Image (cartoon, rainbow, N blue to C red; front, side, top):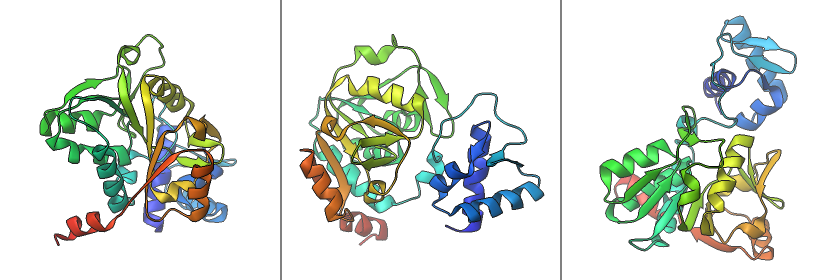
Length: 267
């Protein structure tokens, strides 16, 4: 990752939270602690943030705290071909008329394009997914209630008695920050709280993650592997990761990225 991109991620992260640690920024950027400390020092000198012990803070923080994790706008441009292939395989599982839940995320967002020709009942907590399907499909759209978190473009509610409890779905499609032996991992407690409510409203849980997510880790576990019915990823998945899923009795679907690459180049 180039220095300019790292700086964008660091400045976005410090704007979202009161204090962001060096460890957090290493996880967001993939850079070493030494590199992150140099970046923080440089941005401090440029008066774009304030260096504090063990991390950094914004000079003008938002009044509403954001969510942990890389912003939607930055994630959207990463591994696009893989995400498109995974999303197509996910939509292939759906039948017209079915009620489904699509959790917010950049991989699940790619489902909107193949869904343009379908008619489903879609419940989502993603503002961009709802907006795109409303404009470009004949699907019925229902949004969850709550606060819109701008960086992740997601709507979350801390209350148990919201509209989520009134929607039943055949399947729920969701992404994750990481996948490991303990299960699906996320970066923020509020995300986990909202996603656990959604999972409880669906018969089947289908996880959409590109193969790099098997290397990612977080301190928070959303659910165990045994809760996942199907996992869709790209052909970069390692044999070790595939064996881990097989041992947990998770159905694995590997989506080829060749079709996405052809579409992107117009061939």
